Length: 293
Length: 293
Image (cartoon, rainbow over the protein chains, first blue to last red):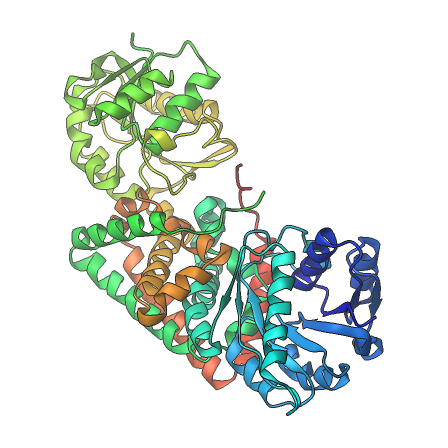
């Protein structure tokens, strides 16, 4: 029974993790918890989990590894309580996008050894219905060093726990698991994910609020608008973004760049165009994950 | 011979237009012009055009309709000269993304009746090699009322010219051709395309300039970053964006929204999260073109 894996939150990320683990190892026992009975039923029906429970009813004590896959604010709120319910020696992990506050909360509890992780994958759709078995195929996972847990935890325990979480994500399809410091992760993810999210939201808001031309703007919105603003429709990023303490200053810096672009467009557009053309070359040269069908 | 269509610029847009027209009507004669000999050879080799020329050598006088498919600044520069080379009664059109300055330049010449158009389609790749026969399938095309040309042009000529350009885009796969005023088009396209482009560029620049965490940020960049910044790699938007006189103020307004988000994230993130969640719902409810495989 202690080989069971618990997944708390059966949405896009938790649901996809369950599916991917079952694909890799059908005999793996997965216990799922979600507040929504429909999601639990869907997850059992799809064979992603063996049994589904409301969190308070879930037999977390039977799991050797429990993964918190709920939005950022909820994650912080339930982490200590979930840690307290684990069996001695069981590992707690998560998928949250802001590792600083989560790792700090995990370090502050003495019940379970915690290994934070953040898979760099998502879609703009939510809930178990949006989960997909290949969501993590080829993705990068950021993983933080183990922390928290009882005073009896040894370095060997920490090493084994880190290895176990890395294996979990490799099993789920990840191409690489990177060891990161929580603060460094949050600084980096500001630029890789949270700032893009905020920009996407601002661009969406600009079109919606464009007044008399809004109906025509909606008609003319095509692939460029669709892609630039896709993240704005992602309900799972906002929680992590709000917990990222580096984001406000990054947003202000982005605002300055946009104001600077505006000034340069009015003063003399050619030097800016040259600059943007060089940027376009750099963007095209970036190695980014291929879109899945 | 006067039934031939001339396409000046055999890049992504001009090349795709040629391919799409040949798909719909293989017997259509298409004369292509491009400064790059490789592009001309590729276009002939792919059966997209019948003959390719440098612009100065192109037999424009044999074309009943000539489409300018070059970047914004070049387009404005060559428009009068190209118009002067057309046969009497031939129609000049374009694909430029800022219709105000182009329509003004077209109205100022007395050689050819001009019907401006702007197909709302693109990819981040450039050149004939990136062209695709289905680029315009299902897309929306903005089309402006005819203007310019000799004093002898009648309302019937204008009506016929508008109809011919609409037919051209329908033949190329467009789902709808919208009649738009140039200024209204430019205001709307600010929000639908040029502002998204500028935001994409600024987000790309933020990651590149993120200092010590830039290498990790690049490693963690996944589908969200890829999509938000795709337009930044699009070399064809910048010319039109630089010609859009509504863009600088829109960029400043976007900067204010981002600064406001930053302040609210620091003050109390929950009301902002509620706001962004509502925005996410609106974004997901938007009818946007489906991505092509």
